[in-house]
Image 1 (spheres, rainbow, N blue to C red):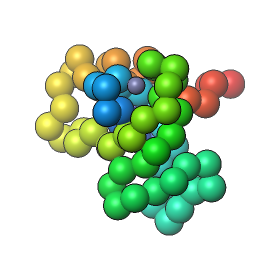
Image 2: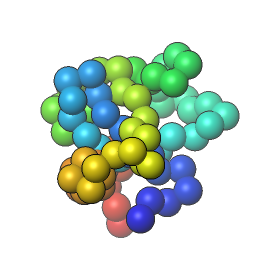
Image 3: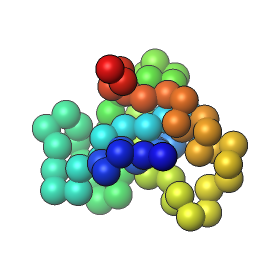
Length: 74
Ligand SMILES: [Zn+2]
């Protein structure tokens, strides 16, 4: 369902989307423990985002996250 580094995430305002979450660091966002400050494509604003626990997330949440990706799929 998700590519290797794609992770469903939730922003501080509750928006769900998918982003590239590279464990060993990324230059596109400020990382702080398990949170990142980055642009939220669902709400069109900057916010703290945290990864969703795929094991406990509902089908609805995963579907919403999968529907919005911060990088256009070719
Ligand atoms: Zn948002």
